[in-house]
Length: 446
Image (spheres, rainbow, N blue to C red):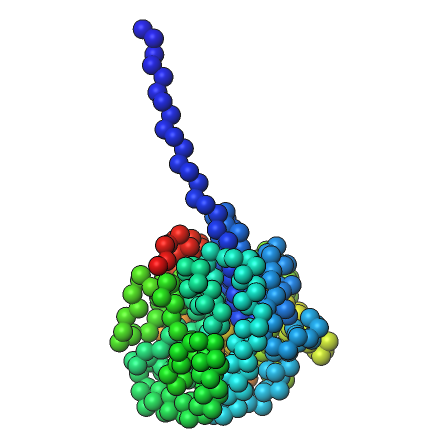
């Protein structure tokens, strides 16, 4: 009897490729987080383009992405643009010794003044860039509204997504510490004090921002607010293990946590040290914090007297270092996501990349903050049992050594970190972000 051939089911049509624009802040933390998300989006078959401050364009090109420059300040040669924030940070090194509350009057005020100017400058270039590339969705990782993005989305019935790569408290709630305050989760007095002074100092800058919003047809923001949640989707890189307890829960339909967003980097081989059994440390204060060379030199000298090995990122200041102890290796840059898994502990500034990468790889940290959300992350790492907060300058060699040995030997902390790491690995951040963005890009917007 002849066999009847079964008909093959028709192949499902492949989802249409979308053009997705990523617009990170001109800082390495948001930039590299967005690179990780962009890599995952490309795997899904989408066209990924970056909107970038000209000084950061080569960062994205180096990872193979198409880049469209958007001036966020007065146009300068690329090399000068790249140096801009470094020089700004170095001009505030004296303020690193101040408390978060005291920094409102100098560093925080100056930062917000400059950030408002970036929003005004973006309005000059951004409309034409968006009209040229016509993205299906724009993902912006910044602390301030770029009105052209909202306008493009509304006029073209396209969604826009806000990415929060800094601390979770960038999205305010009355029951959690205010952003940049470094206040403890239960220290309501410190929280209220910070909020009050911040609003007093920031009012003239905020009034100017509201005037700008009015000039482009946007409604004014309440005092102290410079951005809003997207009505379509908001992606937070913050891990669940350190989340705050909010009075107003963030609905999953509009807010998604990524459990960190760790990009892939080239492999790293640990150098051969004289004593391979000593605890191995990795030290980095980020691309901007490396300008605090006096602190890094002091740490390196202290390591030379301890039974440890240390890998230290000194950024663009390598030529300022001499007489490096044999148990210390320094360089301008290290592939951090490839280094952290191989060390026993990390000393960092509290930047969100370093903060989440330590949790992702289950490594204890000593956080020595100096500005911005480093203060929040330093407090949070200690109050959740994932590491320690240490004053950036007020320590002795003996105190530092004791803290390091405690960090690398605390069994309870190691168990907590192992649990947190396992949970974060179970939900790969870049893949989840790409999946969320993919779904949002296919929504019909009224």
